[in-house]
Length: 415
Image (tube, rainbow, N blue to C red; front, side, top):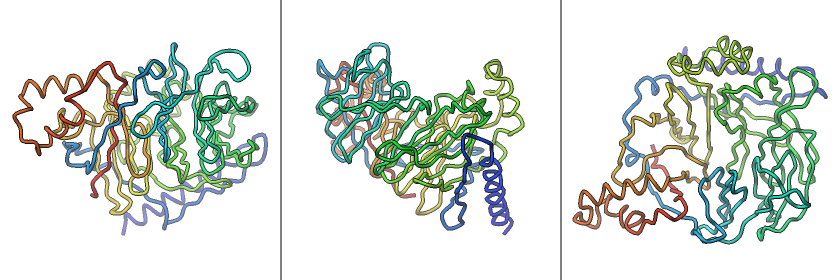
């Protein structure tokens, strides 16, 4: 009974706080329509799970795992996967480094199709890539470069360019004809709207979520992604905010609240760090030594059945899966996994989700090490139905370290 009262009070306090924040003076009046509804919101209690830090083997969690090795050709040599997107037909991989700034297109078996590779200063070219999206309705790839969106077809041919520089956009997502953007506001005021939704003609139709400029420019963000897209909905979560919102064309819907209990980083401490600005970096070692989560949710992905989040505590990445069906969570740290599970590979960083599957990138050096270890232990002598033998035959036996890195695609068991 006390827990229910606490949950209800927490929701109303959060709603009041959001309404107060939303009244901040800006370039235009903001009407916040964030919804807190007991029938749709889930408060996920993680304090007990964090304290226990259970020893989890990924074999016990995963129902099915497959592997995709994007084809290695003269046109598709990748070293790092900065962003991965799936569609019904294609796999898209962004590599954004000094030597390679391109979006590569493969089929779902990993066969190379084409790429967007237009580095330069001329028409239809870009000097850098901040982010990208795939518009499945029009079969267009939108590349975000210096707050401009350059659109290309699936053959990598330039179509048009949209100038959104006045919004200072650093992150984008596409869903059902709308473009969702995270904006580093250029407002003359202390606070500015960080979420902007555009229609298919790139007209802004909704803005929300004022963020202080000190927060937007906070140096200890650990490359956090703010927007997440599961092909049905786009979600939003800001740094040091434990609430994940579902974003629509005219309102934000509070969906999931992470309750870290005693491990939540105190708001007063975080406010002091914001005031420190760049000097906050000097306190990083002290922050790592604390018991607190830094700084709330780092990354997250939402499927029809599960919510996945990770967060940073004591220099360790914690992973947590929450089942919408059973309202149960499983939480563990990267260091507490079995280093060599029998059947699957350990989860380090989950890169995304699609159609109730999660996917992650496996480093070739790591896979090569696992292969060497298995062959040392005479894996060939095991029975053919042994999980280790199945994995060996599927991915390790003919593994070529000179290929592109492998992507593991897995589905969770019900829990």
